[in-house]
Length: 267
Image (cartoon, rainbow, N blue to C red; front, side, top):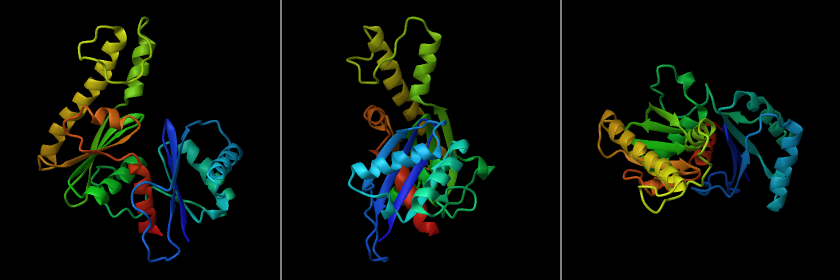
């Protein structure tokens, strides 16, 4: 039986998922959500020993043991953390992980001027989006940055757009203004805020939804179609999608699913 651990190391969070494969090597794993999943805060100062203890504890609280894991695949946009996680997985699972990066088979031609500049998470999301929805498709990831990744009808990675994430924008606003306070990003009672909290919520939620819709309307003609599918992932995807005209579906575990797909293409 194959038990796959997928690890996505982001600037703000580290997402982990476990996919259980059937004992029959010819059988496909369950599609969609991983069987187990966790989200950790990204701390650059943690040692491999501390992370090893954390992983053991996560498995234990689910009644599982790290010894069950047979394969590991990792993507990272935080270069200093990658060797630490490589040591962790080698120590725990007695095997080196697959690393998403140059040389890995993705099945997706990259039409970037310099393919090495594309973040691993963006390629992973694009592979998953095309596999799940076909092309052309636009994957919008509401992470530390809000990214738009565009895949052609032929399954080519065409590039995309990068926008400051909602939390980054909010933090910058609060750091540079004396009388504004941190808020929960939620739907206000009306667009015209009657309180400072309402005004901030309106600007952040409706402003970002409007930005997403405007970008989609500009991207679609360059993909050669007005009907390119639009899917969203990331922590705030659901809230923004509820106010967007063009986001069709939210896929919470898009990146983890993409890692599973890349593992299958490379094992």
